[in-house]
Image (cartoon, rainbow, N blue to C red; front, side, top):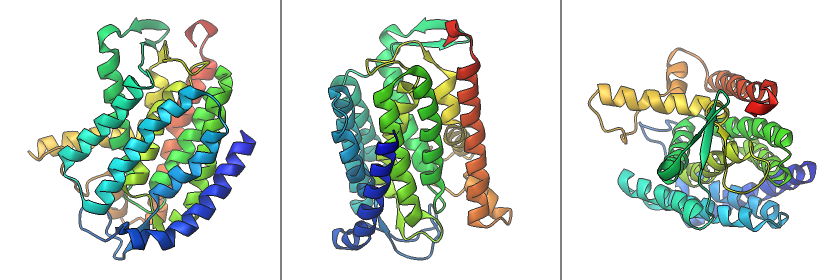
Amino acid sequence: MVREFLLGFLSSVVLTALGRYIAPRLGLLDSPDDTHKAHGRTVALGGWALAAAALPILAGLSAIEIWKLALGSFVALGVGLLDDRFGLSPKAKLLGQVLSAAVAVLIAGWTVQSVSLFGVEMALGWLAIPFTLFWIVGAINAFNLLDGLDGLATGAAAIIFGAAALLAHQAGNSAVLALLGGFVGILLGFLSFNWAPARVFLGDGGTHFVGYWLALLSIQATQAGLSAPREVPLLSPIFLLGVPIADTVWAIVRRLRERKSILQADRGHVHHKLVAMGLSDQAAVLILYGAVAITCAVAVAARLLAPPAAR
């Protein structure tokens, strides 16, 4: 894990620094708007650098299952990059997200076979595929919505991956533990450019790529191997992604109450509310880091303190 962390960190720093100069030539730039980031400046998008930094981590893992899962992450990256460059409609972007999830399900055979709640296992049966598709697409969107302040999504993902690494260690899942360590390093390397005032943004390419892996690894970290997950302790991945999930659910409820499309962007997310209360962007980010750390701590504690039969 330490080797993958260092490799991920160094690769991310080098590639993100390089990406600052490549992105303008590819048209991968984020300009200010009134609904997402009111940053008042044009900033390079470096999500592709995260994916490139992950390649040496993936290359060091011989498990073919990991590479099959990685195919879906690169589809998610491509969808996000197309949106960054050309601006996809919400429906087209959603279709692309479903496609990336379908790659995980149909090519990698990654479906959640059963879940457990308070020690009671529930087989999903015919619901396994729709449940898995919903979880992956939902996680991608939830993480994307969290990316509203400099450094927020990047740091939050690093915390979540770090907590998931503790679960993978407890489960004895060495391959997933190594991959999680690599992602923590990659995100911290990127954060050195993404912290306020950010010199590089994740963009949709970055949020889609990272969100895809958050969906998969938050569940696979609870498993002993790389096969399709079974007896997934339902509360563990939900608490790991607790903050982005809660913010997304509230956004859907808020938009429905206001008779707006749930796909319509707005500035009513929790990070916007904190800034509207008079907090600085950095203070709002640190508060939300704390919230993410708390929900992740609950996920880890619940798993580690559960009786063996319920693990």
